[in-house]
Length: 262
Image (cartoon, rainbow, N blue to C red; front, side, top):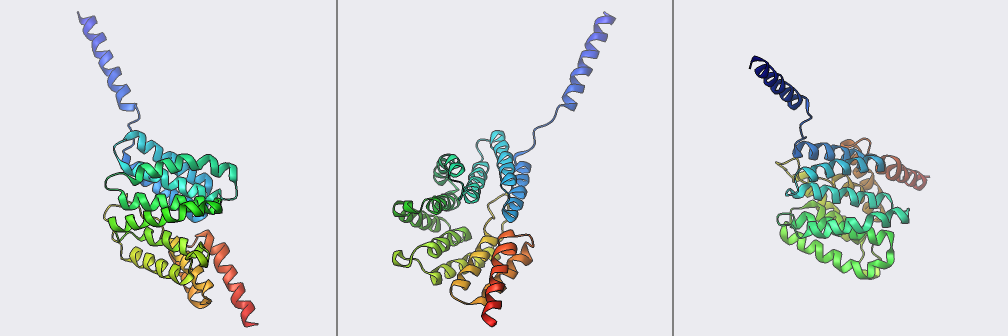
């Protein structure tokens, strides 16, 4: 009997030891925080490998909680950014696009995600146009409809005006494009970002730097170079390593200003 008790006690201790050292699942919120931090770094440095890493983290979060819409949102967001990073790589773009569009459609119909989901889906369609300009015929009206619905759901969502401004910036004038209208939308987006107070850090917050960069580009097109320079410098004061502005937009503008003063 004593031997049996001893064996039983040892078995219990082994089970307890195994349960103690077994890795515990990482909470969904921690995965979302980790993924957001990686995605922000990937966006600033325009690093596709980091964006893929962020997506993997969000996929783990989704596997941990299939009822939470945020993992799907961020999987879709990283997909949108991957489309942007592969505009010149048609094979990679097409490989990503179908699944990302499906995620966007699903997200846009989710309760509580109406504004963010529709805005992100509009962004995905905008990337489709950038990669295949002929698709503008069928997708432009869809994009503006989605943005109208997103605005109706939450007019304080700054990403709506970022996407609408980008459409106005890139559309030919004969189809409704306007640098003035684009600048108005980007200014509204920037204003809303600067007023935004998000109590929940897990909620969508991307787009501020892009709004500043696009506002600067609009000012350039309107030949307001000093305003453009101020906006680019403001973007870099927020994120000194924002590559699009640091290595592209601001140096090009400074060369333009320098050439004009000679």
